[in-house]
Image (cartoon, rainbow, N blue to C red; front, side, top):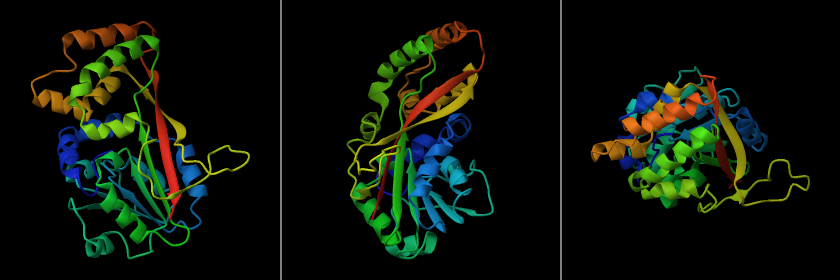
Length: 276
């Protein structure tokens, strides 16, 4: 998703503004199991705040479970592509918010049941943002959930070309991306983690919880996803075409090795979830 509330959001907003339409069309929908798992740990379901909502993928799913969803982003362009629902309120926020602004935009102290950040937390000033989260979350029972996803999996032929592209793209990713490559395992997380899904003993764990997001895509959709990368836009601004004619040709050849035009593309999703 696009950048969120504070800190590095200025950088991210600009990157994702340039390809807001591609982002909305090509990014995966998060699995229903992810939201079911989060909801099981929220005793109250009145108000959810989705931060860095981008084009609203998470906000839409949350609106099926929670009475109201406040979805915020620094990018007006991204929000313009988000789906509208009667119980979702979208708001474009400044790059830094005071507690007074937070109260008027999202809710007063202790009024929010769930705060979510999908594929955006690595852009935030975590110290400031976590203070805002702890301020608005209900006590007790408020839940914070953040997740990221890593590189997609298609099949060995396509994935080999992808791996070469990802290595080539390395210089053009913002350093904040490293925490995604670490699958949020190194993420500072000042919350009490909830139980691992499927744990018979229901023991607490600090490990990210893994899910899979899947999307049926043709080659054009897959290439649109690659062009929605922030690294693609950064490289393009530097005069480097990561998807030059040769690379696109390799993808076409790999895609054609298995004759189905539409393929299942899968992204591993890593969730950190805790309570205040």
